[in-house]
Length: 250
Ligand SMILES: NC(=O)c1ccc[n+]([C@@H]2O[C@H](COP(=O)([O-])OP(=O)(O)OC[C@H]3O[C@@H](n4cnc5c(N)ncnc54)[C@H](O)[C@@H]3O)[C@@H](O)[C@H]2O)c1
Image: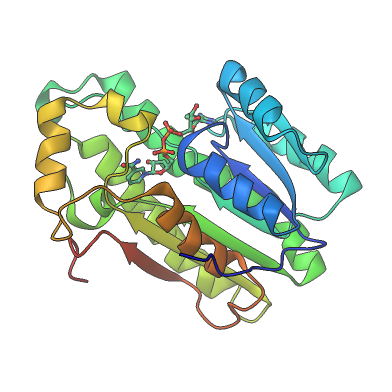
């Protein structure tokens, strides 16, 4: 199938969690479409590999923990000295362990919420002023069906993603009078490294709920993110776009 052509020339995109999985595929497609791309990740090895594999002068990277506000703020300050940030993809995330709420380790619970929700907040808080100044921005927050439906034995993850959905609805409305769109996407399971964090039974249970009867392909996900990040998305904002193969009915 031929891919739709997107035009991201003269656009700079920041993708968190860009060293692998969804983030890396989005980075590839943005680069093919003419964007300058910055990827952030905490996994320095994978980040180095991504830069070597993509080998593109329009790609750069930083080791940043999105849950650390000071780190995020200082890196955004440096980037915006040189360039605007037109597109922000809040994609960094972890599921944490598979465990019932009453058995969940307290520190781990906080960490999962911190990365999925506070990470999204930290990046939006520091990038949005630049978008306002420029009167242009496209933000896509990568949530999950878990944030809509709630997954058993994944309370921290479900809460973090539900929080990211709430944040999207609020922030989108705050910025609706500007040429800035803020949307969330809610994918079902795709075969990326994140699945290794969950038990096989949990992954199988997730898959059994998907009417399409298969995993989401990363390229299918990227395609939706591209449209939401493009200049052509002039109206949709503060919304949640489902890509769950029929699992979620709202
Ligand atoms: N793959 C799926 O089944 C699935 C389904 C629904 C939602 N998602 C969401 O999609 C996003 C991408 O996940 P993926 O499937 O590509 O997983 P992945 O594990 O392949 O990629 C996630 C990346 O985020 C990075 N990361 C983790 N914590 C970070 C932090 N604090 N700061 C910066 N980077 C950090 C990881 O090092 C990794 O490179 C996540 O938010 C995930 O919750 C994935």
